[in-house]
Image (cartoon, rainbow, N blue to C red):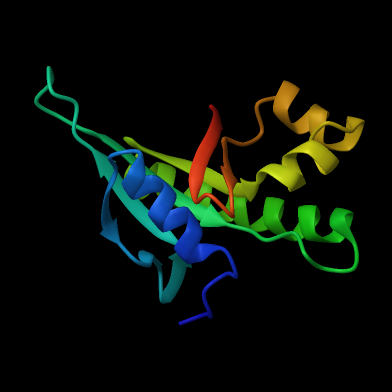
Length: 138
């Protein structure tokens, strides 16, 4: 099993503060003979409905020497998880969790904006110090 991301626990606490129940830590995707490990699986029960909302969350720090290389790696991992998850659990939405600083510095530039505009990924933006979710971008 891979090591936890630096901000794994902060995202977990932020989700719990937002009334998400963590169901898997990690969320294991089995495809063929391979196991892949999405950081978290969570479920939020909605009071007026019988079924709850389900998500999987991949946490990325973006603390490497190149933010673009970090983005390329995160995007490749996200696409792989997304494609497998869409076949195994199509009702579960995959989110990439990033710090507020990463969103402000990278996703407000043209290279990040194009991914959001083309709806390539869903983002969960969090404050790592306060351990709270600041924004969801579906």
